[in-house]
Length: 367
Image 1 (cartoon, helix red, strand yellow):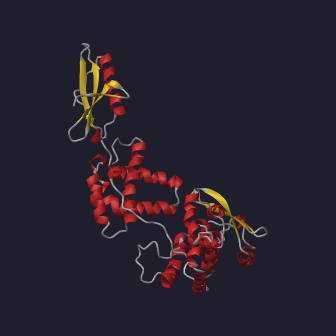
Image 2 (spheres, helix red, strand yellow; image 1 turned 135 degrees about the horizontal axis):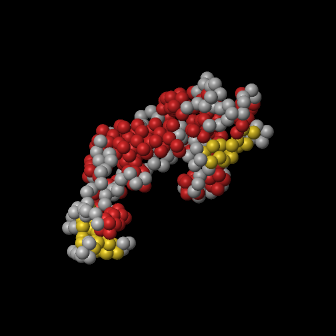
Image 3 (spheres, one colour; image 1 turned 45 degrees about the horizontal axis):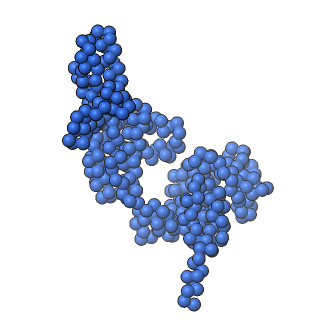
């Protein structure tokens, strides 16, 4: 196959499709004797792009006009390592992400990517190497965890490409992810909720956290972010911070929770955190370490740690809140607002629990 003119730059930049499927890029120009010349810039697999070629052609044309020495062959630009791009990406995360997210992301990189790829020039990392990584990690990690590792690699590299730190084709786009069913279906029954409260009866922090979780459906970080100024006891309205979507929304308090808060926060200042031991913000780890063992003891005996469908975790409290709303006949649109879902499709999973879901016809089928 012959040379093909670029759709964007015409004959100034030409493409040559190799039998391997790769593409070689060339530039054309007229020398000082007005003769047409063609120079190979490099291959697509090595990070060469049409805009880069056009830039090089402009440099060559200017050199001809000024009478300088012409290059015979373009030298491949120096590539940086994955570690170098990752460091800049993590610096970027500090601007927009929470400490928990940053710690989780950096640990995933150090544990799964750094030793294998960190020292390598990013143009040397191939799709086959990523597939080998998948095969090794799936031996002891869940499919979703393995997907997260590949996605982190892809995110870091895309950051480098967008910031013009490198010019490569991201090999992760060729990698098939493992199929994962992430839907948590487990929610607590009223009897199980009672058991959990009895289990943590002597722990004021966990009791308050549970009541907020089961009353508002807020995520862990949302509940830990509640300050006195967010609560209006007279109207039983609470302002919740959705840190995931970076916005606030409204929730409502039960009489039971209002009565509990009246005696607790009366001496609090406006910015004091409510779910706390010392009015300072409680960390997610402080809740996890206290609540997870109790949930495991009551509900998770014999279940595999990767069994997302059946294990009870802290996020199950949000699912419990929404599930009981649906069971009580709350319209899905209202549940969407109370959970601050951006898309009604996120809320549709609770439709099967609604009294009008037609299950009563099945209940009466053989009576």
